[in-house]
Length: 248
Image (cartoon, rainbow, N blue to C red; front, top):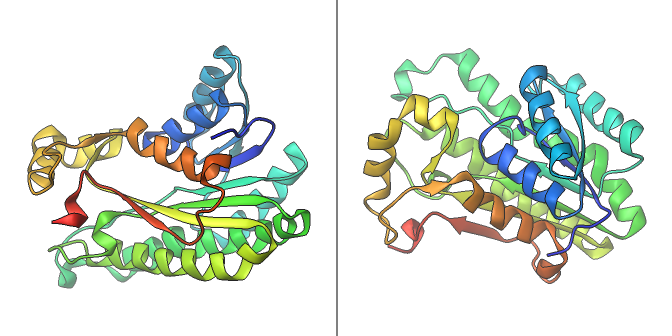
């Protein structure tokens, strides 16, 4: 699972699964570029990485804006020289009955969850392919593969990301770039704690064989596996990390 000497760009890395992934990649030897909107939270993650003996930099970006996505890719290269690992983790999740979803929320969800990964891959994958080496890991969700009330917008955006994962694997895999995705189930993060709380996450997890929700580090473990050398023969996979929910 070595990522020593690699440069990893992680979007949405100031909290939750993105933060856990950034920390794990750094402690496994990667130089991590931590992207997010909140400079104070970004600085805190950079400090945590450096205090643990790792290397990291913060790159501010608002991924709802295509120009900001392209600027993030350029800033990443300017800061670290190249990007070897791209983790598309940033996402927003408007929830609710279909008639209540505002057009602006629909557009914002697709901008961050679909268009931002698309533009970042378009900007960074060709250089990976030229070097003959690179990994891209997209963070999806278990509700991209089955219907639930209120998650249609969020789930459909992640379903699009899963199809892009497979398309990018076919496009860039022959030139040494592995593209995969993880599909988390209920996971305790600052965001889910605020929206659902422990009780809500527990209800969501009741239908899974694990009968519990995940910690962010458990999702990050699988992201790091897919990013590392141990997954060298894994291309175009969507790995469920959902406590078995997709199996029942």
